[in-house]
Length: 291
Image (cartoon, rainbow, N blue to C red; front, side):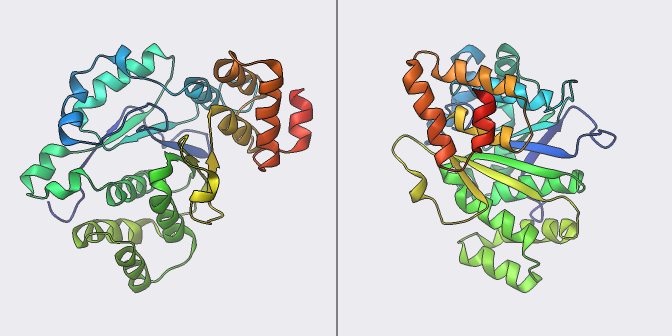
């Protein structure tokens, strides 16, 4: 049992015969829902919360619905999987919240708290980088041919950079372990990550982009200078960047703008959209099409 990370995978659709070439993997915590696992006592109460009590980040349900539809006129049912460091008991509450927001999904990956306690490794309840690397590598092993888009918050920058390096830099096993050790990952986590990585190292799928939702007290400059990381401030930034990547339709972008910036004046909406263009999230040609 110690050779495998204590996570729980709940997939509700067989994606092996799906025609979509991408998989969208979302970290739920503070990038989609305003949920933080700051204290053990706080997280212990999460499964007891009602779905209606979960606070969604403005515009993110519209982004997810747009991704699910895809970039073509016909409905593509593009696969979306959520990852959460919360316990598996959160599944029904989160599924209910997604249903209330009209969001479709294909599965959840959770940190299995009960197994962690049985393994006498309580430090894993607060350590998330090793968990997320194992979760993403597990999904890659299930769907090795797909390119992936990753979505997280500013605490995921290190995990995203490590994952991108493992997939794209052609590391040897010795160098891969050295990099994980230098990043401060526990030997038990490294023992779980490396066999998964060796299993999928030669897979065809790539990491297309990793989006980091930065908090209001941070700026894009506080992230590591890594080309694989794309900082976004809000759902409008994300929708515009995904439109540039041909993952959503312009109609989805307009819905996200209305949901996120609706209370603001037309001048403010225009300024925020143009700021996304100045930061390279979307091209001038796209902005002209948006009107």
